Image (cartoon, rainbow, N blue to C red):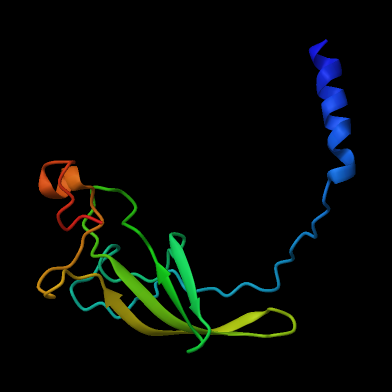
Length: 137
């Protein structure tokens, strides 16, 4: 009985199905693994690295620039000063192919008076209490 109901229900939706076109990847722009950002506070994997914009990517069409954010280091235990990477990227308006990546600026997340930077570690690790956000982001 359940199988018949599911089939009938599935068929009853068929006239309302909407077809969507699948997108195509136009190009790939590679940022070398050893590329660094403009951060001057240290060196190493979590201090001066470029990439990892999976958390957020914003395109400012007025200024034709992109902003990319990585939300934390590879673990919630590793120090990582939160930052935004501002960059330019040429995108062909017809094909969508991207090229000519250029890092323009590295912007650190800082508190209101600019005296401290936000950190990617979890509040429990950074502050000793998971209920206190503090400078954890």
